[in-house]
Amino acid sequence: MIKVAIIGMGNISPSHIRAYQTFSDRCAIVACCDILPEGAEVRRRELGLEQAKVYASHAELLANEDLDLVSICTPPATHEQISVDFLSAGINVLCEKPMAPSLAACDAMLRAEKQGGAMFSTVAQNRFRDDVARLKAVLDSGLVGPVSHVQVDSAWWRGLSYYDLWWRGTWEQEGGGCTLNHAVHHIDLLLWLLGAPQSVTAVLANAAHENAEIEDLSVAVLMYQRALATITSSVVHHGERQQIVVQGREASIGLGGDVVAEISQPNGFPAPGGNAELLERLQALTATQEPLAHTGHQGQIDDVLTAIETGRRPAIDGHDGRRTIELITAVYRAGIERRTVDLPLAGDDPYYRPGTLTERAPRFFATSASVTDLAGSITVSGATGPDHEQKASR
Image (tube, rainbow, N blue to C red; front, side, top):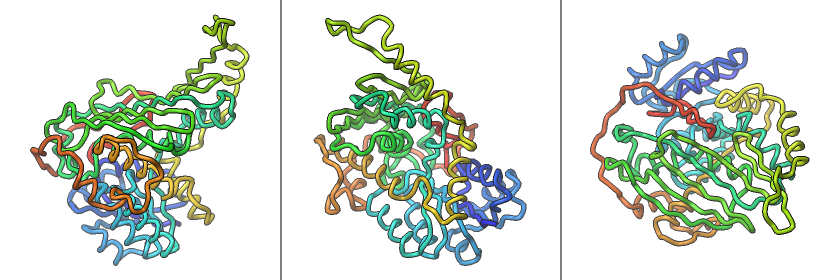
C-alpha cells in the first residue's frame, strides 16, 4: 500500500484526493498539510479522510510521517523547496503545475530527484484526455503531412477579485500571470505534440486587471524549422473558448476532432468537396482509438502509482516540466525585452536564475488586496480546450 500525503489543501487538492481515493486498493492518504491547519481540517472531514493527520508545515510532516509519495498543491513559489526536501529524503513527488518559477529551480528539483533516488512527476493532466490522445495519434500517423501552423488559444476569463487572493497577482509569489499559470496546460500539450521551437517572439499586456502586477494577456509566435505556432494566453476572454488547431500540408485537425482536407484545382484554388479519401482515413483512425481507462488527474495519478509499483519512469517527469518552463521563460524574456529569443536557453542566460524575471518584469498595476480565501463556487469551462479543473484558488 502506497502511503500518500497531500501538501496544500486549497481548491486543487480535491482533484488529487478524489483521484487517490479511486485507487484505494493501491494507496492510502495518511496525512495532509497546510499553513492554515484549521482549513485543512475542514477539507479533511469534507473529503472523508478520517485516518489522515493534519500538519501545519511540510517540515513537520516530513519529520513525523513514513511516506512513499506526496502531492504538492501549494502556490508556485513554494514548489522548489518542498520538492527538494522530500526528494532528498527519498520520497516520491507529484507536483502541481507550474513546476517552478525558474529554470534554476527546476534543475535543483531534478538534482534532488537523482540524489535521493526518488521519482518526480509534474502535473500535466490534460495529456490524459481522449480528445488529446486522438489528436496525438493523428499527428503521429503522419496523415496530415508536414505541419505548417499550430493555433493555440488558451482563453480563460477571471474577474478582478481573482487576484485578491494573497499569493496571486505578483511576480514574486505567483511567478507570472496567465502565460505561466493558465496557458501552461496548452504549452505542455504543444511541446508534446510538436516538440520545441527554435525561437520565440512575444507581447505581454495587462488589459483588464488593474489590481495585479502581472500580465493577463500575451501573444507569442514560435518559429520551427518551417512552421509557425501562435499561442494566445489569456484570462480576459469571455466564454473561455479554447482550441488547438494543427494545419498540415494535407489536412488540418483540431482538438475537438474537426478535420478538413483540401485538394487543389489546376488553378490552385480549393476543389469542392476536398479530399474525401483522406478525410475517411483520418476519421477511421480517430474512431479506432480506445477510450482511456482513467482521465485527467485520475489518469496521471494512476500512471504515477504504476511507476512507483513497477519502478519505471512516469509518463510525465520533471524534464517535461522543465521544457515547459523553459518555453514560458523565453516568452517572458521576449515580451519584456521586445526581441526574438532563441531556444534552448543557455545556463548563463540571466533569466535562468531565480529573481531575474521578478526584477525585470513590468509592474502593470499595483496589487490592491491580500485575502486568505475567496468565497464562491469553482466553475469549469465547457470549452473543448484543456480543462482547468477546479483550479480557482489553490
